[in-house]
Image (cartoon, rainbow, N blue to C red):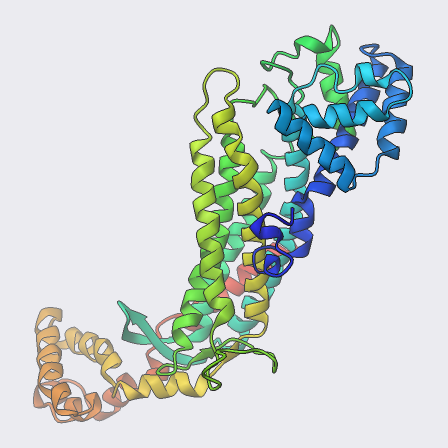
Length: 456
């Protein structure tokens, strides 16, 4: 697969983890296809669909096949000559059979039987890899929640400072999303891990009287479930897989985008961990770019684009439609690898994230107390009504802020406020640490839910 961008010897690591790339590369995929076909022959021989000696010859031949450059060349040339996906593979194996196996190899099955069964087997392993990294990311966010439960910072809406929050509260928002995705992977597993082996139009017509038993036994040997019906034209399970990866990758993108913005020099509240050999710019030595946070956005875009392609494959003509099905040959590996790399990078980013608590407080203080306007307005509202209180505080802000006056100075000098709120009340209302709402309790609630999950 070196001709494919994700298989680049130089840049391939940017788009997929080595473990994920290995699942979809030509050699392991072809090796796995051959193993599936050997199991198919043995299963068919158990039910007298093909001769036992033919199945034995197929098994011996496949175990002796070296999936090397020569074998792959034969497969490619056979495909290019016939435009059939497995014609080259069939001929390459048949040439190597020394007994009767050549006549019975790949008997009664279609390309989609083998490709779909391989794909479900492969996605099961991909799911395992993704979950490992998702759990790494989750543990890292849990740690951030605990360590920064009380770290006060500005909460921002529409890009502007709104109210004080804690960084632990922000991280808890990430955590609940990641936990939902973890549950979704378990839920999706109940609909995945289903093999195919349904024949030309899905009716198992080539497998004889014991067709359903053969299907069951074949897939049982592979650790997959039998389908209730052929799914050669029903691709909703794969579209669901694509959208699940969109959810997970887009959460990573959201977190990465937040870190990207909070690492800006003017804000500087978060920083990616950085190795000494890392380069931000080859012309500006001072730069420390948010490389990982940026790349999460790139990978998430690749994931979303390919999931959209899978949505196109939901619409099939009749019992099989190559136009729709073959889209998956491109989209499923690419989005799975991109999402896998996204989650792995997210975990690494969160594990090494540097939190600048002093800068968080300094940025909040730089707003001169104006993010505390809600607390003063609401306290005043309890005495004189909300609309009147809002107008008083709003007008005060409009008159004081343009002249560089702090919110504290403006409030303490406002007779219409001091008439209803005493100095002690105002001191509490103007203390950011006392005006973070339920941030700490919400963090505690999220962490308690995580602990219950672990215990059950």
